[in-house]
Amino acid sequence: MSTQVRDRGTIWLSRAGLRPTRQRLALAELLVGDGQHRHVTAESLHVAARDAGEAVSLATVYNTLRAFCGAGLVQEITVDGSKSYFDTRTDDHPHFYWEDSARLTDAPADQLEISRLPEAPEGAEVAKVDVVIRLRRT
Image 1: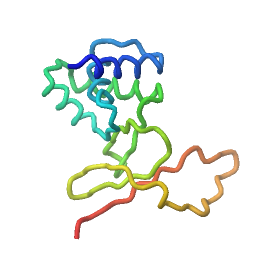
Image 2: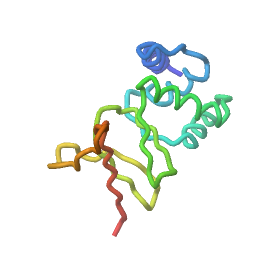
Image 3: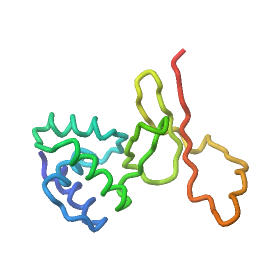
């Protein structure tokens, strides 16, 4: 693993105030080490960690991703109410969900236009709007 990749992971964790444990650092390096954004499931990140020679359990991957979410490092996008993807790009933006391959990718935010939302019930406010556009190949 290059020093630059390791440094990106360490900096990413320290900016969020997370202690760089061996497992957190290994997963951080896989998520942000090359500077690219990722959409991963816990399972796909577990496989990537195993392929990289990291001894980390699936439960640890889940727990670490939850810690990353809590620290604001990743956001969770849920598809079908059961499949969770974790996105390293944390600004508000829409997603494409590719049904044939179960992949999540960024959709162009500049092409999305939401002109009106329903009013929130009394005593509530809209916290966030998630847009997932499901795609099927023709």
